[in-house]
Image 1 (cartoon, one colour):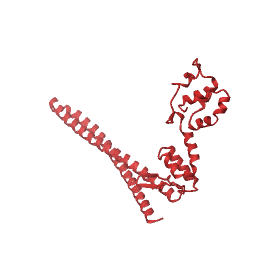
Image 2 (tube, one colour):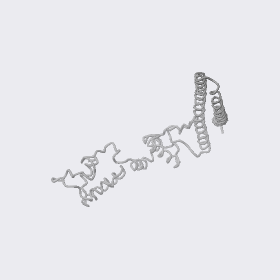
Image 3 (cartoon, helix red, strand yellow):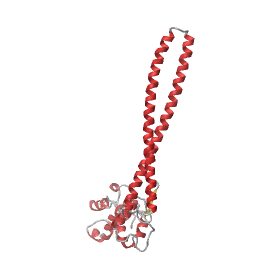
Length: 261
């Protein structure tokens, strides 16, 4: 491992150690506050008992003054302890998140150094202070050449929207056909930029624009429409369009429906 890798690991380890230490100190502080609250509640009970005794020895006016004074003290203490509790909870949440991020960063960096993970070309994966780049995009097809795992990683990144399909095409020009097929299988026909419902509305209600009597679609044509779920399905239909026509399918209506005519 080079000096840069050692520095990254050292930084991550320091982050993990700091967050862990802070969480330990927070747990001690929370326990201390719990004991203080229990002591306060116990003292309050004793004080209330003493006030009842004092009530028989003083005037109503003096008793009212003393009660208000004690209530004010209690309110100040409760406000103070609630404020501290809020600050402790906030610090706990922050350090818990920091610990999770640094731990995930350590895991990612170790996988990267072991050759078990490489970001797709043109992408940068960042976890906390750890940034790992997938290298420059290539139009020559030589980037990560021969690595099926990295090609699958690039496809998954595009599926998840972390990189564009154009970036995958640029990086793997020798796999354009495969990428096109995968992309079309993942693209609902209704998401196609060219798609429009040419016959207006729900499939169960559409009419044939090519029938002079505006007859309901026949079951065969309706079944074909229902089976076209994505761009890949539509391309398969278009490739076999003459066969469908010979089977009596109203292909013109299907093309019009999907706005592809």
